[in-house]
Image (cartoon, rainbow, N blue to C red):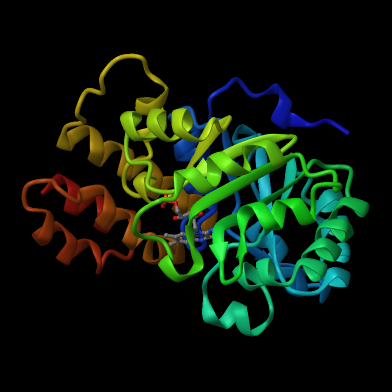
Amino acid sequence: MKNFWLNLNKPIYALAPMAGVTDSAFRQICKSFGVDVVYSEMVSATALAYGSKKTLELLKFAEAERPFVVQLFGGKPEHFAIAAKLISKKIKPDGLDINFGCPVKKMARQGAGAVLMNDLKLAREIIKAVIKNTSLPVSIKIRAKVGETDAIKFLRAVKDLDIKAVMIHGRSLAQGHSGAVDWLAIKQARPLVKGILLANGGVKDKASADDLIKKTRADGVGIGQAALGRPWIFEEVKSPQPPLLKGEEEIFQIAMKHAKLVEKLKGKQGIIEMRKHLCWYVAGLPGASKLRQKLVKAESIKDVTAIFSF
Ligand SMILES: Cc1cc2nc3c(=O)[nH]c(=O)nc-3n(C[C@H](O)[C@H](O)[C@H](O)COP(=O)(O)O)c2cc1C
């Protein structure tokens, strides 16, 4: 088994998994700005176990994205076992990750995501099922706290399992995706992580990335929301120089490159899906609100080109 995690230079800057956001086009754009490792959007182990072609389709990726980690969610070890085998054989990513952090209620009702942190026995069964059915390195993504279980209690319960990397989102389930990040919880978990530890939550620039790494002693960080409309954040956090602000023209060029890639990979529907990305790109630019009003109606590359050429 090749454990790509060990070949990455530290600190490691990862694009955190984001459903509805981190598709192949966005991952490729982030890669062009130097991100070290990218995660897929979370995909359902149950859907894969039932042979969903659409779910497999979601996992297509370009070689340039490597190292590419597929993230699975679900609540049944037997579904994870089938999914792990299938992905390893058909998709051939560089790693498999298990979601123990998603706060969405619909997932909680299926016993998937963050609620699993409160069911240590089942969480162990799921991790074991994935490890047993793949030769790829297996990682997990957890939260600082879910109900009665904090990261330390969870990691103690799984410390004998061969987990190669852990990303800890330093927020509780109750906090969702915003609010203060408990860096101390990540730091305290450090001795329990034998492999790579990525700290996650609230990184918005180089200073906050450096700060989180220093305070937590993690091997790197996962960046989520700060990459929305700003995929160049990976170039900024990796550069020793202070960042040069990107001008409007350069931002439009990056957004156009992204849109063209989306259209190539997903067709016209892709442009409709990526309207949110287009709006994120123009956030903070002069006339952003007028641009957004047009971008939310864009249906084709032609429309996007016309809006950005005004
Ligand atoms: C729109 C959105 C979708 C997300 N989807 C996932 C997901 O599929 N899997 C996952 O583990 N976390 C998901 N997350 C959580 C992020 O990976 C990350 O932990 C969280 O945003 C905190 O990092 P940040 O403060 O850098 O954004 C999502 C977050 C957002 C905002």
